[in-house]
Amino acid sequence: MTTVINPGLTAGLGARAQSGAPRVVRRLVALVIALVVWQLASLWLGAATLPGLASCLTALGNLLTERELWQAAGDTMATTLLGLAISVVVAVPLGAMIGSIRFADRSSHIVIDVLRTIPPVTLLPLALLLYGPTLQMALVLVIYGSFWPLLIHGIYAVREVDPVQRDVAVSFGLPITLRWRKLLLPSILPMVIVGIRISATIALLLAVTSELIAGAPGIGERITAAQNANRVDDAYAYIICAALLGVATNAVMRLIERRVISWHPSVRANQIGAAG
Image (tube, rainbow, N blue to C red):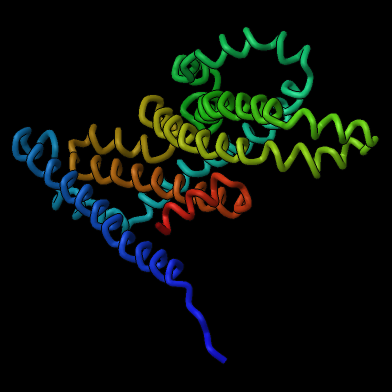
């Protein structure tokens, strides 16, 4: 039996394999440029203001062997994930309910627009007065900041459901639980997942901000402590750790997005683009 190989398919796979290398090279070049700029800025500003890359990496390596760094990173991620989880549980169902009820959508529009424009940091003095530099204080900022993107995505996700499909489901008398499970949930899930990914980054930023300004336990509080002790290398090492937490959080959320909604055209298009 003779096996016939499609030349077009072979060429396409070869092109994808060849294009993968330049993509990695471009990212490495961008990283190298950023590190060179950092080193040049350190030479210009002075090590007292911006330590060199080698000094920061050495400090980070020393901190990795100590419990203090891991405890601070754990506190920051605990605040981030707990605040995000509370926001998801409250905002997503509320947004879906508002989006599915026309009167609620129209009547709450102005209130939502006003409240979501209030910077979460403005709540910091009140939260600090009520709870002090604690986890509860940080959660106030994290929940408030991550709540609104989730609520907005929940509202707009329900709006994007095909009205024809919804009317057909109602006409056939499908139970509301079946309509949610088979029609509404698959339709709103992609936009909700995107909202969770955006809110996860916001939650991490606000967690570090509350620690940095108000002294809640975590990476931000360790940055302030290192600055006050004139340990500039350690301060920038903690900043690098916070950046790595952000990168890891975004990577995990993208992985969850690809797993949960792998069937969605946007995810499949991204996968094809990444392969190509």
